Amino acid sequence: MSRSPIESGAWRSLWTMFVPLLVLVVVTLALLRMHDERLEDALSQRHLVAIREAQRLVEAQSVRELSLRAELIASNQAVTAYVVQALDAVLPGMEVDAASVADLLEERRQQLGLAMAAVLDADGTLVATTESLSLDFAALPSFAAARDEQALRTEVVVDGNRVLLIAIQPLAAYGNSETYLLVARALDREFAASIAAVGDAQTVVAFVEPGGRPIAAASSLPLDRLTPDTLQRALAGDGQVVDIGGQRHRTRAEPVFGSARVRLIAFVPPHVEASPLTGPRLPVRIGAVAVLVGAFLLLWLYWHRLRRPLARLQGLVEHAAQSGDLHLQCPETGSRHVRALAAAFNTLLSRLRA
Image (cartoon, rainbow, N blue to C red; front, side, top):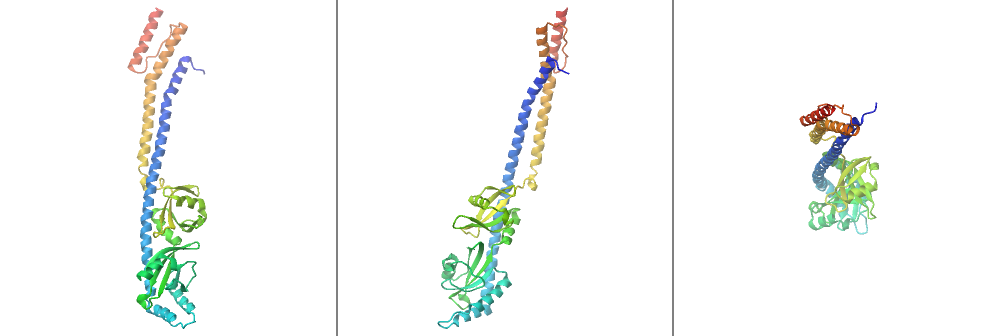
């Protein structure tokens, strides 16, 4: 059934009135999205701060534990006496019985859960070791400090694709001023996971090779999910957003044990849906819905009480002027002023008919 020109004008007026409502809906949705992004930023920053604090605590604990293990080996008179005797008993032209010393160190390594243990001479040369390392110990700042200050020193080193926390303990207090005990702990998945658990994130111990290629030495998530590009972007600076498994993560890279080369990268996934701090989303959404419903009701009331009766009256006036039909009748509905106009229009046509 086709509408009359008068009704069509009223419906066109209705569509025109709802354009502001559509604009309001779009603006409201944009504001909600902006709110969610800012909330996600706040939550990510909270988790990143927690990760940073956890890293400091775990690093301090790791240094204490490794230093304690070094002192336990060095202070064991049976061990140090055997090492000193093996070194001092060497005649000119003879070699140190490194195998026997290495066997003794291996026992202590297994007992204390170390990655390796070794004995160095005053030149930083490996005398005996449970595992060979491709490092120049004489060039390490920790070895120079331990030798000069005759005190235990720690440092983070990179050996191949591994990252090790080492402690160098002078044996001067135990009978040999020319010998140094070296013990190491690998910064492995357990180390990364112990930090990640605090901030509900994922952490990666990474470094950059001399050629510029980033290497993930240990990770709390499967290493096959990390691409060189992901690591490169994460190491570029704080606040980077990277994609892991189709999910956006915010990142922060912090030096590990103050190392200039090794970094701990924290990957923080979205927490808006899961976090208890998302409570502020509910009142915001309720408020947004209330605004939209209120705007719709006000717009509907405005159209029903004013705009629609006025559009109908305008259509009747135009129709009467064009057709000369004096038998028209306008419903006296709407607001008080509109009803008064409709009544005046009906009275005018009535008088004209008379």
